[in-house]
Amino acid sequence: MKKRYFGTDGIRGKANSEPMTAEVALRIGAAVGEYFRGKASNSRRVVIGKDTRLSGYMLENALTAGLTSTGMNVLLLGPVPTPAVGFLTRSMRADLGVMITASHNRHEDNGIKFFDPFGYKLSDNAELGIERIAEEKASLASPSDIGRARRIDDGLGRYAEYVKTTFPQNQKLDGIKVVVDCANGSAYKVAPSVLWELGAEVESIAVAPNGYNINDDCGSTATGIARRKVLESGADAGICFDGDADRVVIIDERGELGQGDQLLALLASRWKQENRLRKNEIVTTIMSNLGLETFLGRLGIKLHRTAVGDRYVAEKMREVGLNLGGEQSGHIIMSDYMTTSDGLIAGLQFLAEMATRKCAASELLRQFEPVPQLMRNVSVSADRDPLALGGTKRVIERARNVLGREGRVVVRRSGTEPVVRIMVESRDQSVLESILGDIEDAVARA
Image: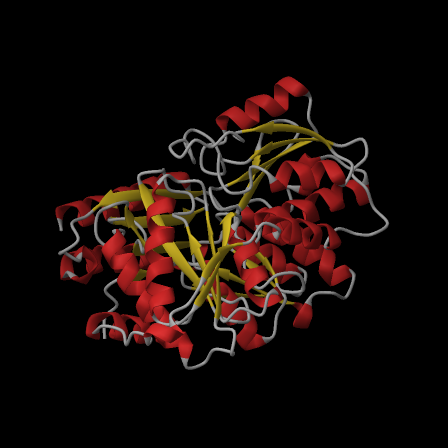
């Protein structure tokens, strides 16, 4: 069965257009309520968090109606980071966690992510099961079994206190100046306060959400303002989150970016030295740079690759029994601390390394020399699959043959937007640009 609603990471789309309508959210809420009702504890608890988009109010109410109609009791957290929902689902013994967010997308979009009772994102099989119920119409509870809903005021505080426990107990951030860009998203309260309470001097930007400005020229996908602020203020580092704070991008004292691959390299090498890295293996996706794989190989660290999406990384980590994984985009999963990717915890681990080693951010963010990489998005219609056509397949296969082991080609349909994403790596710049152009043309023609 092909999934109708669920994509790479939950359900996502333009707000007030299918599938992000109140009607669909009501139906999905009822379906997921029925799916988990049979597995639920006597309390039948569901926690719901959201980011700062205006449409979050509409979807929150619709999901609550659907869930309570099937007998689930809803605890409303308000604006919290996505990892807080994963943490609180498990901490509060809930049967299900729900996060309303479109992550790094602008305010026009929204989405819904789900967590199981253990704080992990749902599997493909669970998503298919929920969609079957949604298509057939959920079984509603009797009048006496309808669920209740109430607001929870201390959820963000619980999460903040836990996050601080992941920072080394004998370490402080005294003397370190940090610019923190919260993308006008769900970390706008918690990130600056946690950093300050751990001793940092904090310069906060994009901490005034109004329902429309989430990820608007700010955050992990638009770092220009944060980079200028680092340079102007003489900060030691910058930390940029996306709208739901499950990913992070680091800025060094020179205003240069450090992507997730560099942070993974830093943590993996450090943890191996400390005998903390389970099995001396980590997990990342097909998008991570070839330079990372080469760097880790020299250290005797094995790299597993998965499909794009931090939930696939987490699934592989659980399957193999590993405690570190992530994505080039800045999703970092440290299962010793959290079941899902957490931008704030990842940022704190980086700052802890700065404080411990007493070195500049730029030194820590240059663990390996990346293989030159170019990426391009090509818009496509929803009803056509250019990657299934013979002409496109031949161009891609020819490109892979030209590169051999000296480069990589990844071409895939996005699970969150109507585009085909093309990534090419090669140490030869002219070959890199030529191959990317050929594939882009082939996809556009198709």
